[in-house]
Image (cartoon, rainbow, N blue to C red; front, top):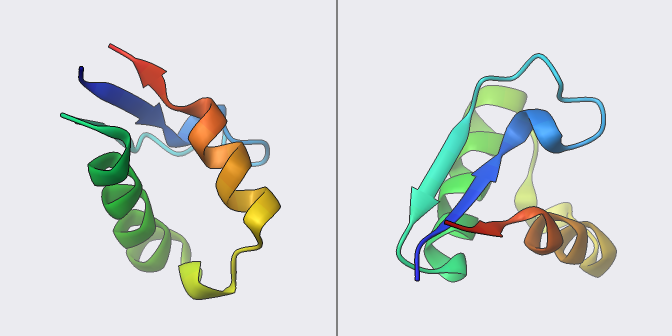
Amino acid sequence: MPYTYRCKDYPGMEACPGSFTAENAEEVMKHVELHARSAHGEDPGQWSQEDRKQLQAMMIAS
């Protein structure tokens, strides 16, 4: 089942047009991590477990 994540749904990222759809949540998370690094200058390796849980909760089955 495909999953979708929209960056603009994350608090503070309302202006970001990034949106990712993939066959499973793990693949979407890889795209989110690449996007966070390149578009927002974040280091996904520094995300807390709570941050990751919030991101996963925001992925919707599409």
